[in-house]
Image (cartoon, rainbow, N blue to C red):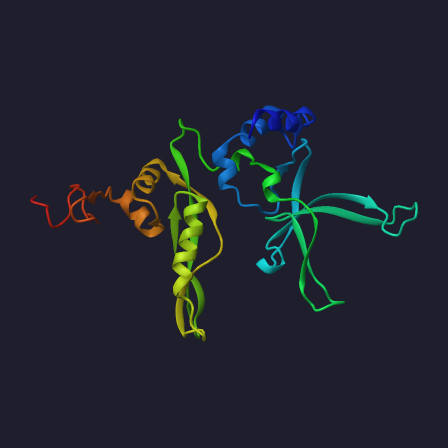
Amino acid sequence: MNKEALERMTMFMEDEFKGLSKEYMVDKITNEIIQREWQPKVGDIIVGETGNIFVISAHTKLDPTLGGDRYFYGGGMCNRDGGNIMDSTYCYQMNADGLEYYYDLDGEGDIIKTRKSSKISDYKYVPYPHELPTINEDSDSRVGHRVPVIESEMGWGAKTDDYMICRSRSEAKDFITEFNADNNLDVVPDWYMYAEDKIEVCELTLGQYKILQERGNTWWGKLKRFEEFKLVFCEECIQMTNHYHGECQKHNTD
């Protein structure tokens, strides 16, 4: 965000919102990592280009041909009939490209792009302290981004088999896409696994966090065992040990 845009945004911003100071909000607005990793969701605090503060109140999932996910926020009373009585309501909305899409039912049924609403990129995200994507450097814990992996079997239903822990939301998104790429059959098989389209922030111990940063995407089950048994990787074998010596079985001489 350039200096002029920041000055315009902060000029009329409230000094406090929901217990968050203006200084805190400005710090998060200018944090490139926070803004890059942001995935809009209901309850998020957002700040517009002129400093107006809103909370996302609703989310509608639409097909990409209709503009994709749409988020709603703000609102008040209005008049829609041209009179002078406030007899209706309104709210603001945003999506990826800032355009509204609708079917031309009076014509050929084509999809028409119409008046501009708002782009998601027009807004900046302000997380609450407990939602921060990283923890203070002095803390003994860090966070990862976890994706539930579901096992589904006919007659038995579906259950969470494990979680893939990723370093960032972008890596989690890539994992979901890659993992589900093979689920492309014409019919649903009796047994299959899929990555749920759901990314959650999870707290890790410092040891787990270091492993994640060094190794990238790691299954939660393996991450827990790693720290529990103080396991390490053998660089040559690219495998985890199953004992305390810090060597793989292949190279253990004790």
